[in-house]
Length: 406
Ligand SMILES: *[C@@H]1O[C@H](CO)[C@@H](O)[C@H](O)[C@H]1NC(C)=O
Ligand SMILES: *[C@@H]1O[C@H](CO)[C@@H](O)[C@H](O)[C@H]1NC(C)=O
Ligand SMILES: *[C@@H]1O[C@H](CO)[C@@H](O)[C@H](O)[C@H]1NC(C)=O
Ligand SMILES: *[C@@H]1O[C@H](CO)[C@@H](O)[C@H](O)[C@H]1NC(C)=O
Ligand SMILES: *[C@@H]1O[C@H](CO)[C@@H](O)[C@H](O)[C@H]1NC(C)=O
Ligand SMILES: *[C@@H]1O[C@H](CO)[C@@H](O)[C@H](O)[C@H]1NC(C)=O
Ligand SMILES: *[C@@H]1O[C@H](CO)[C@@H](O)[C@H](O)[C@H]1NC(C)=O
Ligand SMILES: *[C@@H]1O[C@H](CO)[C@@H](O)[C@H](O)[C@H]1NC(C)=O
Image 1 (cartoon, helix red, strand yellow):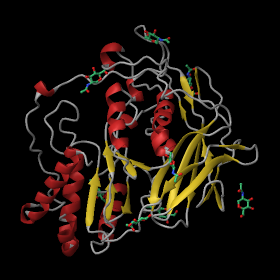
Image 2 (cartoon, rainbow, N blue to C red):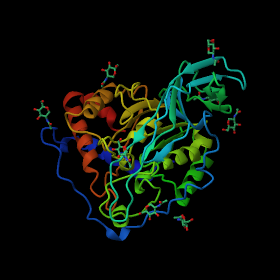
Image 3 (cartoon, helix red, strand yellow):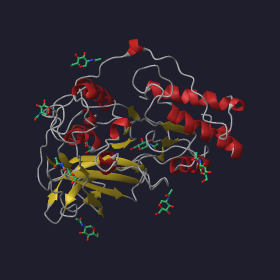
């Protein structure tokens, strides 16, 4: 189920490595782009969004009870568990919830109804504030404050083993239903088969719900979403959306309708409550708001092994799964030679051990080669980082570079 476009990217990457002599050094890069001309015949309008009244997006539990439950992959012996409680608010003035007012506990065990272990995590609340006055028949932007986003990490698990868990606040008590998951097999060169569900540009349309159903029908043990989750930034804050923002809302700076994120997580819960999810941000996760801060929803709602892989951020990170080392790159955060991402990637690749993980897989949101109207020439971002990285690799670690050629 690898996305064909991404596989093509990997193939392109290989070609680069095998013709190593053609690669210039970081001092010379980045090079001029070589792209096909823009092909306007390929332009298609996006699919129409489903409304928030779609039963898959509607809130079914309220108050202190957990909803939007989803797992995140950390390693074969650990698992991230995330969920939400409380009511989000969207209006001119909002009162953020106290994120400690509902506790964050997961109890778990290896048989149903019997929970030998428990872990305590933390809660957080994020806000999307705007200061955009009414203009051109578009109303003043409203403010959003989220429900409590709960995050915990279970550690010390046995690989390739089924566990049963519930999450919530034991003091109220307010627990979720019981769910289960199976940990990944131990990492190693013979850890086959490995199945990974890979999807991108998901959104919340009749077409993407059908794509998701196809993915679920294949029952991949874990799912990767390579950017563009909800498209909540195609909306203004009163919940009105537009396929062409600048035409529908002339002169209005970027806004978003954050309740779509809540709907998105409700829709995916039936699968992600029992299968680990991993994602990386795309351009639709930027969602700039009043403070110039970006990625607030993405960062607040999902866990990923950023600390575990030494990047200390979920905007770019890596992990080992089965026979693969998987690198998730952030195309919309600094990737230049002096950036934290660049330094982290160099260190991460230097630690890559093909004897343990013969596969090296890299993922990022924009396509590398593309003549389509969306993301046309976006690939310069990643060409830069790949180019620099491979060149540096060749200079310093020529033996590792050979291993880089998948
Ligand atoms: C939203 O909150 C910001 C920051 O407090 C404030 O400047 C802005 O006026 C608020 N928006 C509305 C519509 O009240
Ligand atoms: C969590 O584990 C501790 C130590 O075993 C135990 O005392 C406590 O009752 C457990 N809490 C829950 C909610 O299961
Ligand atoms: C939101 O604003 C748009 C643009 O002014 C308007 O057409 C729409 O009716 C408004 N929707 C609501 C629910 O107020
Ligand atoms: C695990 O949960 C899924 C639903 O998420 C259910 O279909 C399955 O039967 C459960 N597995 C076990 C072993 O209980
Ligand atoms: C995982 O466990 C199942 C039995 O539950 C076994 O059939 C399978 O071979 C194991 N996979 C690995 C990679 O160890
Ligand atoms: C997308 O969904 C619409 C509405 O259900 C449908 O008419 C259209 O055929 C779908 N497109 C594809 C490519 O499946
Ligand atoms: C990540 O955090 C750890 C612990 O706080 C720190 O030692 C390390 O230097 C940080 N790494 C980066 C790349 O910031
Ligand atoms: C990177 O940092 C060095 C040392 O501070 C500086 O000389 C150089 O101009 C910087 N390069 C870029 C591309 O910012």
